[in-house]
Each structure stands twice: as structure tokens, then as C-alpha cells.
Image 1 (tube, rainbow, N blue to C red):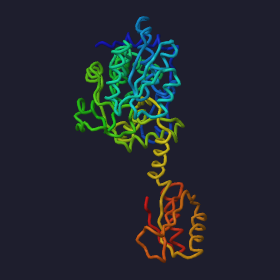
Image 2: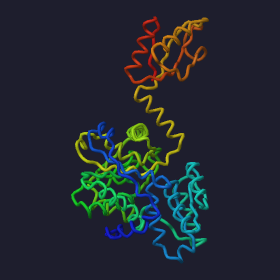
Image 3: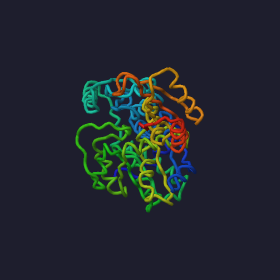
Image 4: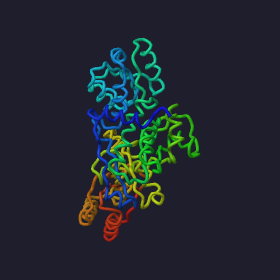
Length: 403
């Protein structure tokens, strides 16, 4: 095996002064919710918001001075780009990052702010790689791979040593898988310290490439799939990482988008921390299969927190709807002056907060003498929502629950 525990220990020495030794914290509330003892590794607290700082730093520290002088290049839609740019800025190395045109605007801005020359090319990651190869040929840049590289894997593996140093009695490690660099490094480190620990990889349902190979999960088509977990939306693992996964990882599970949304919401509500989709996937796996993990001591890797703020807002609002704290009610009333006031009063008396109200006269298939009132309300929970509906019924108003 090309990646050894000793290589990871050397990486820890090299990158220690330049990366954050993130906390591994026990979550009392999430443990109570899931029935497991959940310890969270907060890699979203790295300077650029993800574990990628570790592998990028180790790769750059292992480059010769001649390679540094030629300048470095990477291709990434986000976290790897920022990790490479951050390490290169500290070392004074000229950096070019190729990003697809679809890369989130905030990640492009952040990468430029770290001193990198950002070249946006291609609608897809594959097309961006074509531009990468052109620039390497033209300028002779040294390429920094995102995951399929010994020094990158060793850098990511430092997380495994840290977790078991902080919590030696963990039974299970849950790690997200995209290209496999993170879980490969963690698995090599963890097995050297605690050979019997169970290591489980987590993938999103849209990109179950490793789960298909390791666990027999049904393969999906080649068409790109929209997923919140864009950080692990990788079509194939690496030539270096896959053999490590096959040898050292016990299982690979797949989580649906809804579970990832729930996990993002739970992290924000309970831990007051922001998780991106890939970072929340591991907690999503625990939420999806509580019986499997009940009573066990889990080390859950929250790999990053770089989520677009608009996406986060949408996830949180959908979470409020899912937990019956935001609902849409429809009421049909006569379209005459004063008919709306009693309804508003009843909602206020029942403790509901009105978010939006839509007086629909024209497009709904109703009598010209009537109107539909669609009102979005906030309530404490589903029981409170039902009490609000009962209060409206008590004044003679029928109510249809739309959402």
C-alpha cells in the first residue's frame, strides 16, 4: 500500500503549524435524537471551511523548489480550489485554478481572494479538465490532484489520528466519499491505531460509484445529477484510493437528498454550525439507519461547511415545512369587504405568525363572488398548526391544508 501510517505521521508534523487541529466534540442532543453516542469532527472549522486544507498543504510541502518555481495548477469547483490557493499563498507559490463556469460564485470569489489566478472554462468539470491539460502543456505547471495522490491522501489521513487520539473508544468512523482521498487516508491511520474499528463510507444517491463497486448498490446512469452533496459528486474514485477502500473500509452506504437536508438543518439548529451537503452526508447516514448505530460510539466527519447561502436558506425553509413549522392554508371566502378581518384575528388569537398572504380572485376556478385566501403561517409544530386550523373551523371557516 503506497500510503502508510508513517507517511501520515510525517504529514501531521509538516502541516500541523499551518492547519487547524479541529475539535472532535460529543453532541448530547444529536446523540439523544439518534440513539448513538455521536462525536463530530468539525472540519468545517479549517480556514477555508473544509478538510481539503490538509491534503493541499501536504502536497505543496512535498513539492521540490523547482516544481514550486514553475507554478502550480488545479481544477476544482470549490473546496480543493480554496485549499490549494490558501497553501500556495502561504508559500508564495504562483497558482492557477481552473473552475467550470457553473462553479458557485462565492467559491470563485473566495479562491481569487486567496491569490489564485482563476480561469473559468467549460460548462462541466470534464470540460474544465480539458482546459487544465491545455494550460499544463502550455506553461509546464505542476498539477495538484484533488484526491488520487499519496501526499494528498496522507494529509487527509491526519484526521484519523486526531479522532482516535481524542476519543480512543470510538466503535465506528463515518466518512464521506467522493474520489476517496479522505476515507483512504483516515482508514490507513485508524487501522494502524485500532485495527478492529468499523469504517463506513457515505455517498449521495446521485453518485453511488464506490457503493456500487463495494456494497452492490445499483448503478446510476451517466447523466449529471443535481445534488446538495456537490463535494462528493465524483463519477469515479481514484486508482490509488479504490484499492485502499476495498481493503480497509467495511461498508459504503448511500443517503438520499432529503436525509442530507435534514442533517444540514440539524447541524445548524443543534450545533449552531454550517455544514455543506457533503459534510452533512455522514450524519444523514446515522439518521437514515438509527437501528444500525444505536448504542454505538460514532466518529462522524463533518468534512466541510462551504454551502451557498441561497441553497442553505432554501434547505432551512424546506426543513421548516417538513417539520410542520411553516404551513400553507387555503380558505375560500366571500369577496366582500370585511371578510378577511375575522380570519386574521383568529390566526392571531391562536398564536400563528403570518408569513405571506395571497388573495386569489382571478386564476382559481371559483365563483366570481368568492376568493381563495392562501396564507403561509409559522407555528411551533404540527400540533400547534392543527390547533390553528381548529380555531378557524370554530368561527365557521373551512380550511384546506396545502403544504
